[in-house]
Image 1 (cartoon, rainbow, N blue to C red):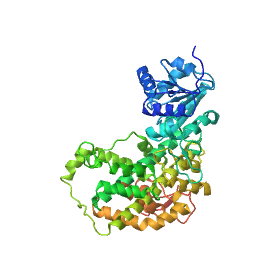
Image 2 (tube, helix red, strand yellow):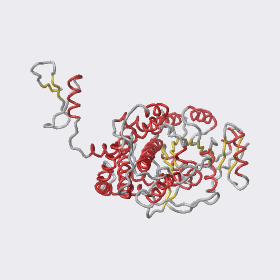
Image 3 (cartoon, rainbow, N blue to C red):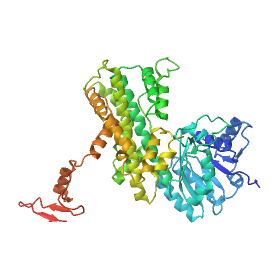
Image 4 (spheres, rainbow, N blue to C red):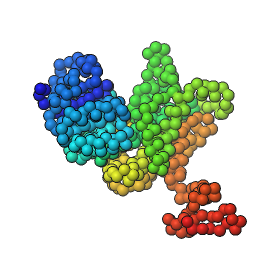
Length: 501
């Protein structure tokens, strides 16, 4: 019989699983690993070598489970959907009351809710934990967003806090410099209990939706600097590097600067110039957009970022359309280059504020929909390090919610309100310039429309609601009465009397 000595187990040795396992081992925890294909386990163990003393691989599932101390804690890092369900089903007969299964994949939150209910009937705990940071984050410190049983979380918390990214508690800046076998010591962990059942995976989904928006906005800034300012990719890379020293300090801005200065190894041309403009996606951005639509929450910037990827994918159609459809040809503006670059920066920052405002607004509504109690300041805190959207900007969001935990919208916070007031003239000028030059800016434009709509006391949907009442008797409310009273015009009656619904 296998001796029960490991503190935790992990199933699934793809890139994320391997790196998370090494991260756990680096922090002094004994970990057992298992993969359906044992050759993958063997290759992983061979690659790690003898220096990783806390890690043991197993060929069969029962031996793997038996190697774990009680209560057994098992992380699943396999493909979302049916493969995850299959692993869970195989584990149930091998586990005892009070054991814990942790799904660290990009699961849909509704699947996590279902799984948690099912496993509760088996007297087992289930945690759905968002894990963000990619390969490097998993290896040296991701942002971790666990949801599920609070009792189970308390048992897992020491490990999660240890392996997560760390930030400086005073300023929120990520602590860097970890190497194999030498993890970051000290700092504030980017890990916190999110809420019951699917809350953790839901917040991870919104994180990814915001990530879609961030990436598309950066691309639009690059497009403007390339097509209107006429800059070489390496020059634009220098600008992004400069921006990374200020308000836009973030992981995505940092890697963008690096990418734009990279030459193609084959042709020695700028690397971005040889990358085909057809973007892929894995679905979390779409989930965010669909959920926003389902709940009736405005999240247009995330949705436009998803649609931008969809539009990019029809490459052949766009090539054909470019030969047929007319529009403005971008003109290089050589005058006041510096001012134009600064205006694009301002437009990017304002759009970013609105995108995050939408994401947090979505989470605010979701907690009512799904029965969660979310701490938005805490969510912003654990996004400051490890995750893909990590940015200095998130410290400001943390401070906003610490100051006012019931803040309805980030745009109402003094800091963000002042930023928009300061930069919006440039924001509007940049969007006007893009339109005049025929450059697609879906996230810049949708963010500004969201802002203008949110700040409008009156929108034209009065007419829309009247239209709905006309053809479908959908009723309307009156401006001269309290909310909640509904009326209908009998449009077929020549006298058109008003009826209370």
